[in-house]
Amino acid sequence: AQSVTQLDSQVPVFEEAPVELRCNYSSSVSVYLFWYVQYPNQGLQLLLKYLSGSTLVESINGFEAEFNKSQTSFHLRKPSVHISDTAEYFCAVSESGDKLIFGTGTRLQVFP
Amino acid sequence: DADVTQTPRNRITKTGKRIMLECSQTKGHDRMYWYRQDPGLGLRLIYYSFDVKDINKGEISDGYSVSRQAQAKFSLSLESAIPNQTALYFCATSDLYSTDTQYFGPGTRLTVL
Image (tube, rainbow over all chains, first blue to last red; front, side, top):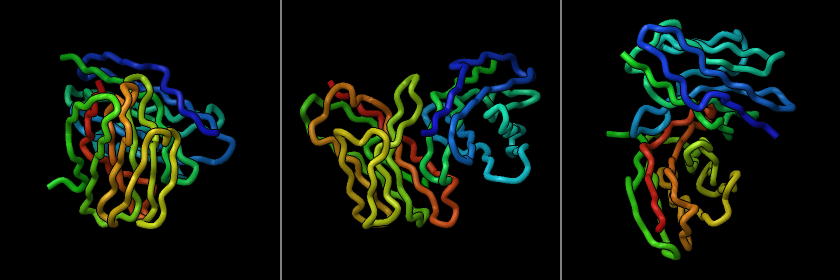
């Protein structure tokens, strides 16, 4: 069975500081990995995904995540956050690419 | 207009009542999903449907049923609501040829008293 662990339920940071949101997964087979973002009072949106190929994947708004098979991790990073990045971030895993198993989420709060 | 819509957006009901949550999509996607979100638990899959005739149970289907009335519509029913079904419910869709990306509706906040 697959599972996802997001160790940090909340991450407070100041604007323009770097941030890392941690995600570890467990699975007995190869998996696809995702980060979804949920802005206040909205549904989830796909931020980035790893399916195969390069282990470093990037989003259009400056986030990146690196698939590390040996450490079974898919941490999300951004070198300089903005107030508008305040949201809840969910890591998810899937064996097939469609049925997703989500982590418990990390609330990123960016302060001015 | 939103591609994935959910009605109602908020609902308060009493224990034992039957409730239906509706989801419609204009994306033309074959696959549709229902999730519930609880604080500290993330999202959990209730049911999913790969087409009108293909409906499958997810991780937490007990106490719920679904109906896929058409490609564009997927309803979730609580036959006899109970307080621990109080949660935020999300519908999502994905394309048959790009199943790895799911598109979520805005959610329905359900409170069972």
